Image (cartoon, rainbow, N blue to C red; front, top):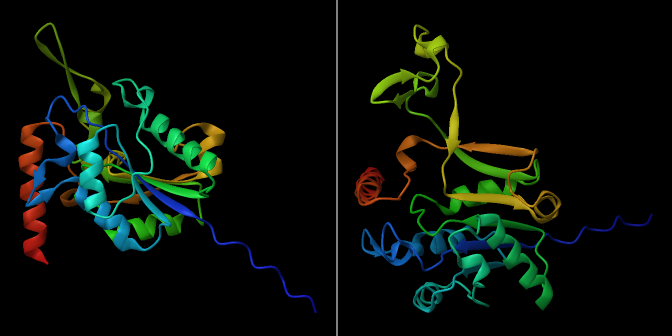
Length: 237
């Protein structure tokens, strides 16, 4: 009997996006976070996961590139001016990286785009996300809103208005649970990404994260809260 052909192993790349032009928090991507550059947490988690054939950093900044290399990441090429401006999206950067690799030879079947300011990302989370790509085309870590969005308010002419007044008297437990993107990483199959030009495809499944392990870092206050959370988590281990 003829033995069935073994399918070739799928190649995967971790893409850590770290441009140099951070305005709200200067040098945000390489700023010290609990003792080391914040980008190092993403690099070390990706390397430790053991699920990537390449862990690379996409940057337009030579200092970021040097620090990334010192922690073991590859920086095979610098980001173009087009994908380093304020209007370029994460999807633009991913497309540029994947096409640059294809032009040079290797083609990656799967990728995980990891933000450089994601100290709560772990090797285990990345392993789980990449494994889930056997079940779906794309994976996104999400967290539940801590307060029901249906109870949200807006301001009009200096006065408070209920955005959804129909939910004013509804019990919180009766409202549909809603989630938002953690802003940490996105795992996706390459063919699905190029088909739709985004990781936000229809066949997208969640990884639900605890609120303690999620924190946007856009302001100095965010940074301080993230460090408090991180230290608390380390003390609990």
